[in-house]
Image 1 (cartoon, helix red, strand yellow):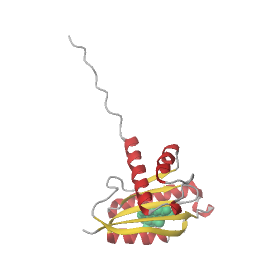
Image 2 (tube, rainbow, N blue to C red):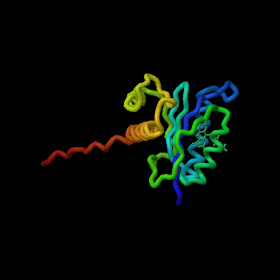
Image 3 (cartoon, protein in one colour):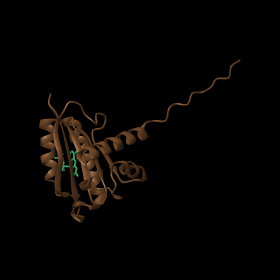
Image 4 (cartoon, helix red, strand yellow):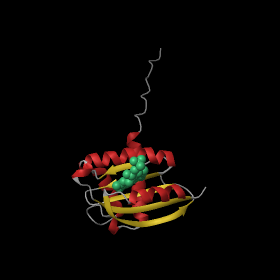
Length: 157
Ligand SMILES: Cc1cc2nc3c(=O)[nH]c(=O)nc-3n(C[C@H](O)[C@H](O)[C@H](O)COP(=O)(O)O)c2cc1C
């Protein structure tokens, strides 16, 4: 099977017709999780008010089909492909599609990869953006892990 990874960023163009920002993003997330699970696509979508940045990876036919659909979506514009290439292994093999916005934690991760104070993928290399999204996905997974079961100490007789 031929795998590929595609990394792009774009500008949100969410209007009131899309039901406002939160509804538009929720719709997007639901569609993404369903479609990506069916087509074996993994990746992460990261956004702030100014940008979407996304990595999608999987079988090259599925990545191409998915990207054609995503890039035609009216909820964003000025879609810029940073990198699209064959890969041997996935960077995001555990999440169908991670979905994260700027928080204190993601901002701290972001500062490791860029000197600019606000998340600005236009000023990042494909490499840095992919690594940042992989770290965000990783830290979100760790947070989602259930608390380790507390071992109950049984009083010894
Ligand atoms: C920034 C952005 C990222 C998106 N990412 C995905 C995605 O990873 N997978 C996906 O299936 N749809 C994604 N979508 C939604 C698609 O553009 C499209 O609305 C959806 O795939 C249609 O699904 P449906 O035909 O099942 O209704 C994204 C949309 C936007 C604006």
